[in-house]
Image (cartoon, rainbow, N blue to C red; front, top):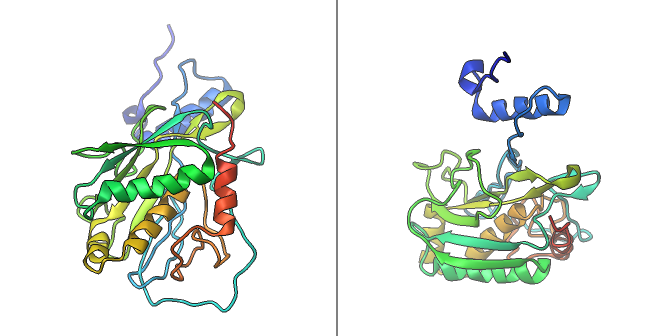
Length: 267
């Protein structure tokens, strides 16, 4: 009689570590059950200070923080970088999938859904992906707190507004967080599914009070960049630059990176 496979509690480890153990056992041929499908995606952090400095913090999600406006006398050549690659190719969303975006406007600015639609229109135009906002919803967004809850491949990307009481990473200095989990795909590759964006309630309230729609959109575009696979770069001519110098739109490198991320495999 075979011994049952122990669960996370039996081993005294977290669910995340347990999934890593199972995947390792599968690679070694020691476990017969199907491997857990979802791999948590490391999306880079971007902190953005309230008067415009951002600092990469690494780990699971992108972070926007706030400090004095930095200016640069020149711009580097267009640049882009990918969060994840497999055999030299970027991990992407499936290029033939219908990608839905669900908005959870509670705590957000007036016109939250329209703001997301504006950002999605830009991302769709650049990537060529079939990205559609499906509307606004009450309650909690799926995976809103970036925990490694299992997601289905057809779950939507979610956009919500959070504060420090709900999400510890949403400190007074953070304006936004974003990232996507990965799933194992055919041929030993991976793809992104069901991304998450969490935006600061307090920061967006301050932007709404001063009518800074351009900054509302810039933070969201930056986080969508992370959701679809862009990492930070060292070029000040890009919105994905690791420091916020006041740029409000995608730069040439951002656009080229997003175009490449829209041409991933159909899986």
